[in-house]
Length: 78
Image (cartoon, rainbow, N blue to C red; front, top):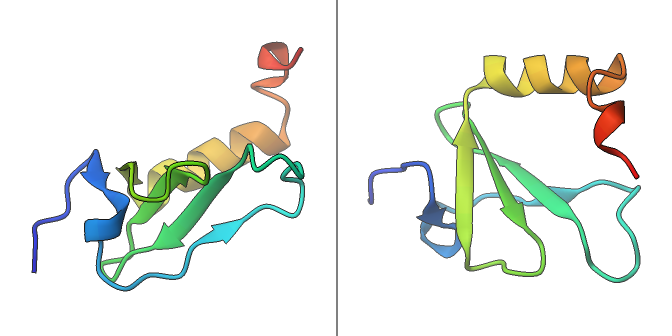
């Protein structure tokens, strides 16, 4: 098995189940996430399924989701 690192091609990850938000738009502009065997979370662009996957710890994803829920990133929306 390959070592999992940040930026690994998503198609080189072990068999994972990719999930995208129900808020994704019909044009396919969405982000997909998958839980890795060690509990880390991989994130990829759905338009480039073999492209790079960013890998985050569970704590990093939890902090991001909390920030998104409380509006910390609303200033980025246009």
